[in-house]
Length: 478
Image (cartoon, rainbow, N blue to C red; front, side):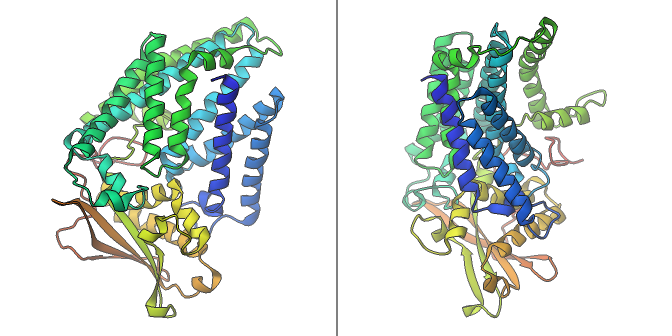
């Protein structure tokens, strides 16, 4: 593979992002404290800038490409990173995080090619890319191991969850304790751990082997799990580790040369980042596992820096996130039968049933992340019902706002049915254990428990997560 194919492949994936985000529209960047989506003008400006930036990225002119990449980087930074704690969509989770990560490196590679005829900056950027990606994969595998994958609590829930699995009806009937789910959980952990170590090693052969293993593993996941463009992006990103792509990425097309002191300063920053990355990751896991703050009052500065870069611990596809799903109903006396189904199991089928716009919206992985994140607030911020109520209110406004005008007028409340996924002797068992009602008039939320033993704030038995002190930190509330 050449660097050119790699570059335009990523731009094509970002173009798919643009198209697939359109059904979510204005609600994509609504804030928690807003009852209405941003206006049409703001939406047109955002998506218009996004479209123009993509067109510029397809240009053969280097100046146009760099301009397009910088605009995309700015949009992704604002949308996926800046809104992680201010929007109910959490910056679109891992898909948003990795889109921002990829566009950042792509822009830096393109800039380095035109300002550094020696290619030393490009080589340093490639080392940063390799170490950064290797650590992401290593830490993702370690987190899976810590969160229950080696105790048979992991990917099997995603396969049987309608919000996440392509073939959930088929896998629901299978033995949860069989050889296949156990094998897949172990493979999910060890492929990422071993591949991460290989990518971090000094051997180019091991680096390419690790990169290939990551690509193949995510292509496999694509067949079973609805991760949208994230799986394909994660299958493409490792190709930068390949020598043929690396050579093209750092090949200079210098328009001008930086002063030697500027070049030396840039190299110092990049190599300092490379050295600091593993240390920062270790400190992050120190917070997470020991629940102890850094000494000398450094914790707040550390948290701010980690959120600014950003550097995160991947909590991707653990049991806490995927051992439940949610049905949504609009309730009101004007509806036939008193209610109308908005989201249920049939929503995630590819058959043309229900409103097309809503169907496209809920088939998008970022919508699954948004809905899941609302209810995991009860798990990760146990006892803070006000935070959950605020998120559910914001999300409910986005649901009502997406309905047809005639249906909007009929809605008096929304009912969210919480369906727990448990393992039985002959298959998985889906139980409607609680309903959450959002009153449109008052904005208040009430809970009806159908199973008295069910507690929506209970974590998975093997979860290492503790109640967070605040968004953006891994320390437990005191």
